[in-house]
Image (tube, rainbow, N blue to C red; front, side, top):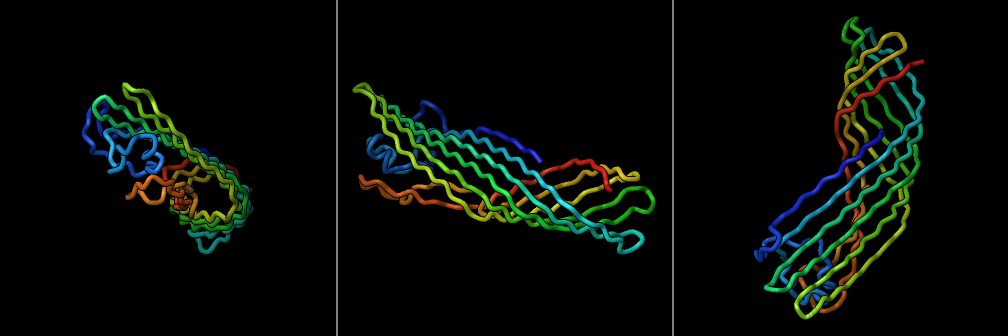
Length: 247
């Protein structure tokens, strides 16, 4: 399974001093030094985000189908799973105070790769003798994954008197177990050993996302705030189409 998506979003208006955008991802201790306290109140005039997410999932499995009645069947399976996830985010804040123009760019990157075991099952209801069946299935994967995480802050303050810049970055490489639950509902057509199936899939990755957040957004005291290593869940869902051969 392969998935890629990207998107852009923005708030506020460039070149207008309105102070109505909350800078919830800003390193405000660095901003206090580089941007001369202007972000002390936690707001800016403009914000934008460029987000790119992509992942590849490869499954190898063996299973057996048990006929439970004339129109129902149960399939149990087990196997291996490989995952490769890339999550790139660039957030830019801009602020105008008279002739002063301030820009803060925060780049986050997360690369996740791992291998693990996968087990699951599905229930099939045949629609009389049409070759069609309704399928409901679920699976649990336990992946041993490597999380390569980085964050980079690059700030610039420009005025008639000159330009001030500042940077701060942090990286980490950790390993942990990544549980993944897949749930799918589909309609399958089978002719002899061949089948084609369309449906809807929900994939939920527990603690699959990692980010560095700055601790203490509400106070700028001319000291460096620590980064907090935060974990959160990721879910993917959408329509699927697959075809295959049953031996």
